[in-house]
Length: 281
Figure 1 (tube, rainbow, N blue to C red):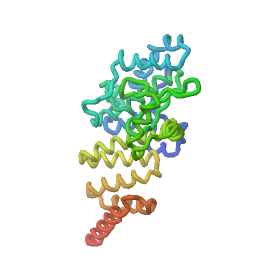
Figure 2: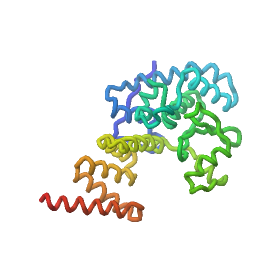
Figure 3: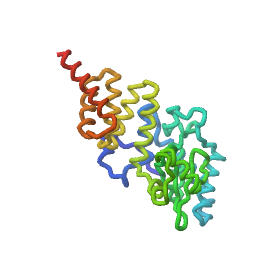
Figure 4: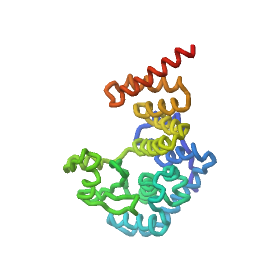
């Protein structure tokens, strides 16, 4: 009998190092903000069932790439997980409970499913915070197998990886050293922050400022030294009319990032907030 799966508390997360920050339970904690009745144990059990149904086959295979091919076939062909190309920016694609229910997601949420199943089967699959779409990587021999979870775990060769990175590097193709750096494993904290950044972007673009503020706040719970999250929460507070919170966050952002490219805009906002506060007195 497995112990009941439980979620951490938000206020406990900043003190955990990257090795002990739980990936699955924190991803479900993010989802619980939007789905408060979420049963975390249900999804842990579902993942375990995904893994156990594969275990005899995986244990009989020696080579990591062949093990991974079997995992991908089960997840993407037999169970039907797929990238949501039709509604890519639907926030449900970032909430892991909805990914399990709908079998649809964005690159990072599908990578989370892939990683959790693989790791339960002893396959050391890591996430890669690649520019653009999130990817996964597996050590093989003296190299790496890099895969695209949004496209059924399709392997990507070096040339395609360079081309994918190029638009995000000023149009320059990365050399071997730069590409290997980009392909470093993403920490659990980095993965979870990227999930929340995706959500913030979706909600800010839709003028849903309460949820945008919540997403930025959760980033700060995970990683209090994220200046962009301070700015994003402050700007969301400004849209909501929470002037005190906006002034506090934007002042801290300006203090911590005097060379930021948006510094003039943020200082202007602070002047406006201070003037408004003076008039209210």
